[in-house]
Amino acid sequence: MTLSRRTFVAAAAASCALPVFAQGKTINLIVGSAPGGTTDISARMLAEPLSKLLGVSVVVDNRAGGNGNIAGQLVARGPADGTTLLVQYSGYQCITPLLQPVAGFDPGRDLKPVGHLIDAPQVLVVRPGFPANNFKEFLAYVKANPGKVNYASSGNGALQHVTTELLKELTKTHMTHIPYRGTGPALTDLLAGNVDLTITTPPPLLAHIKAGKLKALMVTGKTRLAVLPDVPTATELGVPLVASSWFAVYGPNALTADVQNKLSASIRQVVETADFKRRAEEQGAKAIAMTPAELATLAANERATWDRVIKVAQIKAD
Image (cartoon, rainbow, N blue to C red):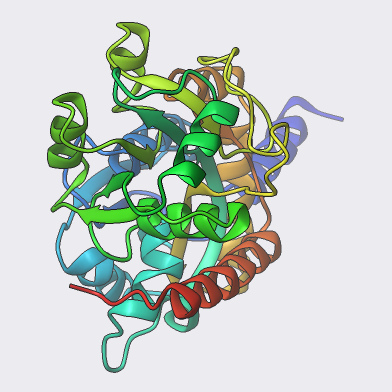
């Protein structure tokens, strides 16, 4: 084989490895929340390595508002070439449509799954003075004081809300819901001792747990968190509760199967790197790659679960 022939074969192999959209275009990762949240963090964790892998510019574009519906509708109308993608939060994909449906738009119908990024289990934390130092003591106290223990969430229908309602159902307990407008205000009141507990993802909690300002009693994931190795899972404690926030990439329904599959393979390649896994662990999360079909099944199953919980608990949107 001549040198020119080898060069030709190498160039052909490289071109086959690239997605089919034209070089020189920009991939826009649309995020339905403000900078700084876990959705935004996961998008930025993906953007740089994906850009290097594909040889194209990858830009994070925050379009907050409407509980994710503004960003979702923008992507749903996007082109078929893979240049407009959504980094989606599971609550917006599976819960928002049940409580705040938008005429003519349903993320489960109008967005095409591409790839999964990270899974962030939730942590049950109580205020420092709460009379329980482990989950067994917590459960005994709640059962002895029905309705007197209150829990904070970031709002009606938030994942924190529906997860705690599922915990109530599974443990046959009664606690009073105190909704806030966001995790920040809820956490502020919890630290001040104005509410008893909350269940939310690790990033806003870790510093307070390590400082002894909050007590972590349980993790809602399938395995313990590397950043909180001494906190048992719900399953270990005899409660069949598995509830996580997950973050994934979606495209418009117009996305061609060829682009969808090649982007999915590229995202998997990023998610399975040691650096991406390390950065996920630092957020109290786990990097998990999925095929489009696996992501579709995950979302459908979770939507069915939360639909039942919402109906049983009679949860209404604000």
